[in-house]
Image: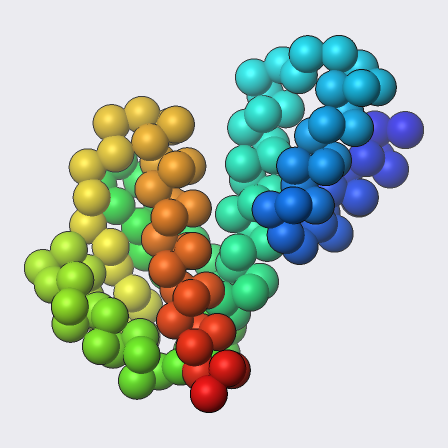
Length: 131
């Protein structure tokens, strides 16, 4: 049953789907432990990564490093403009990785900050698709 739940969680794509899954888990098992709450936050981050074409994100106490799949982003001009507007908090390295500088004091801040960062990248990527 646990593996089935993990598989199902891995397939969730939107915040609405994740919230619905959380409600279902509460209905089925009662109050969720902190570890499950954290898992749901990670699932949301992974879904955002897929939407922004992020292959890898490494978040630490001092910020995050973002790697795009095949070094491609759907709206490169928008990404470069956003990076320039966020300077000195953000820069692009010669290896095409985006570095975001931020002091995240604990895991909760790191998860929330990573989610906000990815939400911005999704918005930028989807601007290109809408145009």
